[in-house]
Length: 205
Image 1 (cartoon, one colour):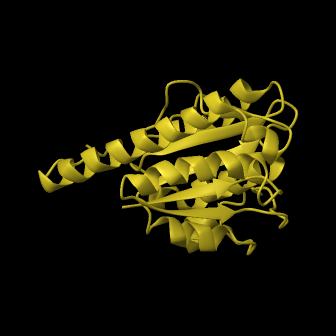
Image 2: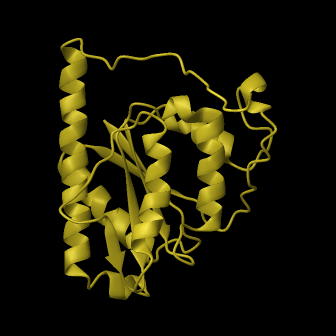
């Protein structure tokens, strides 16, 4: 079993990374492999709404999104992490997730996912909500902890002092490992989710 953790911060080893690393540590302790994918400082364009991906089966823009979608097929679970920018997720992560889920959501569907948020003081709840909405529209079980998946600090050193936040991350990792093992056992028993073709209803007459 493998979990892909996405660092939506431009700081490679900042607060968001500190939180994700703690989740990864717990997953590893449960026998789950992990990889942290660094979004970094690369320029991620927003979705153009051109719908070309529905025809060519990939995004027309070549800035790492297609490579991530292909990589996602190999993983069993996901954690998307973001710092709080103006009470929301980082712009780069939002653009990235818009295009990943629109062009390649099938590679993530039905796999457990979690949002992780780092903030100095406030805005975590709204950021958490923004990220979770991608999972709820894509048939993905959401993994929780004993508190909302957030860590506080203005630097990685400060985040490392947030003992409650670090515990939240560890429990998140343990819960995801548990859920992944339950899903694996279910598949061994022949259990699969019931799938239906999407019905699109428009309200313009």
